[in-house]
Length: 348
Image 1 (cartoon, rainbow, N blue to C red):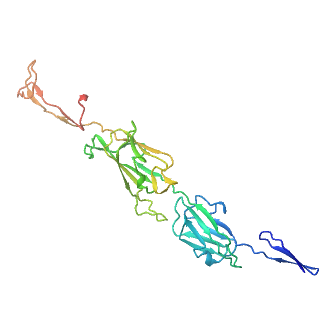
Image 2 (cartoon, rainbow, N blue to C red; image 1 turned 60 degrees about the horizontal axis):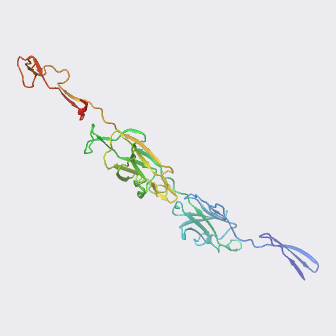
């Protein structure tokens, strides 16, 4: 008769001792080692949890413990990448040296999105057809979009003498009494049009905080430009604000940009990123000063001679215009001064 003793510890080899008719013989019997998934990338704390802030172009890799059926791992059914419940279109490549499958999504992953890599049961090992016994999944979350940044502001921060002097009709006039200008803000990328409102971008008069009414419009610095993902980052990347009425001279104004999720945000923004920089921003400028009052013309002109009309002025007699005398003893003439703009009568 035979006595069989077996010792199994995990996937280690068992030692089986057979004793037959008093003659003991020992030999080893191999225990079938299970096929497993060694790692999944981006891994985070595999297998307990996935990674955060993963690049939109990160490699998605599944590594097995052994060489597996290439046909099964590349069939699009046994290994999938899920966006919610929907599978993504991916290109899969198997490396028999490392037992790894690399998955490359055909489209860039979205910002701030959670994805799941799912390895399903049924994949077999090449050497003995051992089957992956249980499904393995790993989630990860992609990076947030970059913050929207201000590239430049016109009029420049701290500038003095901003704007163009105009007349009452808004026409350029060197001695105009009001200022016409546009506020231009260039951004790091295209803005979401719905986020451009008086609450997110405002022009105020500094002395009393009064908001200046006006209209917004969006312009593109380069509408044909796209990045490596085909995204048109230079479309609607410029905001132009035109005040509804001309601005006053020698007045300081402030451009204010709010921050946070309700602020200006990029066209690529999500609920978790892509807004204007995290702190409120403001830029001040002062409009052009009134021009210096200058004498344009004087009559008689400087250096003129033989000016005026002779009149006769008797003692105690007021000289009046029109009393011209060929042999008069005084001269009558008006002096005319023309200035660059209207003058205040109080200045005489």
